[in-house]
Image (cartoon, rainbow, N blue to C red):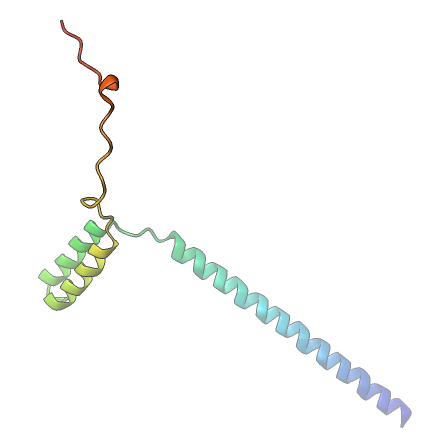
Length: 104
């Protein structure tokens, strides 16, 4: 009887060790999958907003996209564009630093 108890305890320890090992392997697989997915997302080059807008405009002309959907996408793309017209102009050089062209 004593041998059976010891055998059961050894089997239980073996089962828990196996469960822990399988869990660690599955966790490693999930981590590798997440890393691979993130790498693939980062490596996909994004089109500049102007080219992306032209692509969506072509889709509207082909009838794949409605005008309302295009307008919604256009507003999102315009929000991503840097505000070039709102940026301040570069400061003018000081009068003593202005370069005059040489006379011939």
